[in-house]
Image (cartoon, rainbow, N blue to C red):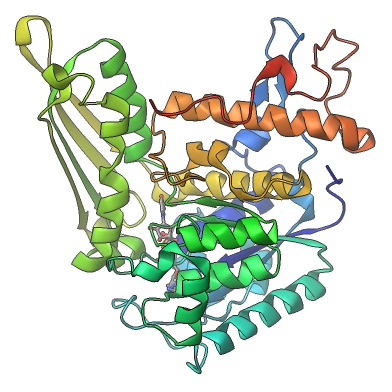
Length: 457
Ligand SMILES: NC(=O)c1ccc[n+]([C@@H]2O[C@H](COP(=O)([O-])OP(=O)(O)OC[C@H]3O[C@@H](n4cnc5c(N)ncnc54)[C@H](O)[C@@H]3O)[C@@H](O)[C@H]2O)c1
C-alpha cells in the first residue's frame, strides 16, 4: 500500500446540508473544537491478532489513513451558494461553530452542476453546465477534477456524491453492460442521469467514488465493470444514517430471539431540503426502495415462514418544514412471542439528519482512499456498513444485518492494515504487531480471515 502523503481532495457533487456539515465538522475536529463523534476512522478501535484483551488499537494506528489536516474540498452544485451560505441556511451548526468554520466554508464555491430537470424537479437550478450532450458534460467534469486537483496540489482525490435524491425511473436495459452504456452515452440517452455522469467522470479520472444518495450509480453492472476495468474502488448506495441504522440493529435481535413479526411501520418527519425534494413522489420512490429492502435479508422469511412469512413493511417520509434538519423517525413494530401472543416495540428516534450522515462521509472518503492505495478495485462490499442499500460485486443480495456488516468492516480494515504493514511500515502500519505476538500467516490475512467473511445463505 502506498503512503497517505500530501493532500487528499474530497470532491462532492451536491454542496448541501450533508456536505457542509461534513466539511465544517472536519474543520472543528482538526482545531480540536468538536470531537469527530460517529466516525469509525477517528474513534474506532480494533484488536490486531495476538494483541490479547484490552481495548484494541485505534483504526488510525492500524491503517495509514489520510489525516484530517490533509483534507481539501471541492464541489459542484446546481445552485451557486458557497458552503457558508448553505450551512447557515441548513441551520445545523450553532452560531459559535458557524463563526469558526465560516472562513473555510466561504472559500468553497461549487462549480456549475449537471442538471436534468426531469430528475430534479423541486430545486432551484440556476448554476448549471450547458447541455451540449453527455460526452461534453463528462469532458467538462473531468477538466473540473483536474483543475481542482491542481488548485489544491492534491495527488489523490475521492468523490462522495451528495446530490439531492433524483426521481426514480425503471433502469434502462443498457445499465447491465458497459459497452451498451457507452453507446447510450454517445446517443445522449435520457436515462443517463447526472449522478451517473459524475461517477463516470470520476472513474475515468481514477477517483474512487462513494454514493451517499439513493440515486443509481456504481451498483449498476455497467459502472461497476468500468470501476473494475479502470482499477478504482467504489461503494454505495444511500447512507445508513438514522432509521435504517436502528432497524438493521433491532431486526437481528428479534431474529436471534426468534420472535415473530406481524408488521413494521416506519415514518419520518423532516423539514430540510432533502425532505422537500422527497416530497416529490418520484423522488420518494428512490428512497422508498433503498429503505424498504432491508428486512427480508435479515429475517429470511423463506427459512422461517411461521415467523416472518407475511409481515407488512411500510415506510413513509413527510416533509414538515418546522423541523428543519432535526428529523424524527418513528417505528412501530408489531411482534409476537410464545404461543403467538402479540407485543409491540416503539422507537422514536429524535435525530439530526446531517449530524448522523457527516461522519459516514468522512469514513467513506478515508477508507476508499486507503482501499485505492491498497490496490482494491471495483465494489467494496466490506463498506456495506455505511449504506442502506449496499452494492455487491456479483449482483447477489446484500447483507443488511448491522453487526454482520460491522464484522466485515473490521475485517476489511484488518486486511488492508495487513497489506500496509508489509508495504509501508514507515507510514504507520500497525506498529509493534509482531513484537506483541501477532500471528500473521505468510501471504495471508491475520487470523486467516478474508475481506468478505460473510455471505448470504
Ligand atoms: N442526511 C442524511 O441523513 C442522509 C442519509 C442518507 C442519504 N442522504 C442523501 O444525501 C443527499 C444529500 O442530502 P442533503 O441533506 O445534503 O440534501 P440537500 O438538499 O441539503 O443538498 C443536496 C444538494 O445537491 C444539490 N444538487 C441537486 N442536484 C444536483 C446535481 N445534479 N448536481 C449538483 N448538485 C446537485 C442541491 O442543489 C443541494 O445543494 C440526498 O440524496 C439524501 O437523500 C442523506
